[in-house]
Image (cartoon, rainbow, N blue to C red; front, side, top):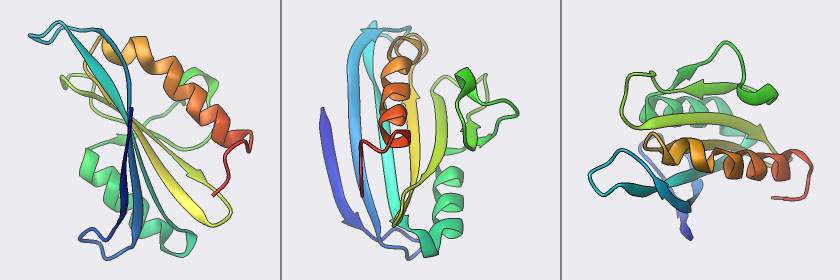
Amino acid sequence: MAAPGGRQTPANGISTELVVLSTLVAPDRSPAGSSQATIFIAAAPVADSLKHVTTWLKQFGVSPVTSPPESAAGSWFASPAAEPMRRLATIRRLPQRVLVIFYLGQPGTFETNRPHFFNLLATLRDGRCAA
């Protein structure tokens, strides 16, 4: 499921395009017993990349990780392991935009749908998606 957020200007003053994607429902430890994970993408002009990236990484409370997950390239960030909502983020530079891409989910759902997140990243890396 996709929920385009359109173009917005957050508190940092940078015009940003937003989109939210939901993954398939999977079992987790929540009271409902299942949930969807979320992929959140924030895109901004390359000229504003430092401020854009810093704002979103701080907003989602992620820190740099020392080794990228599953041999993925690029800069990676994650939430503290003890937090109940797992968050993983990476940065992708396209010709005219810098993307901050987050993957969020409850334990269980996060692991089940993680391959879909990496498939999306592979699409961006392989140039099958242009901005």
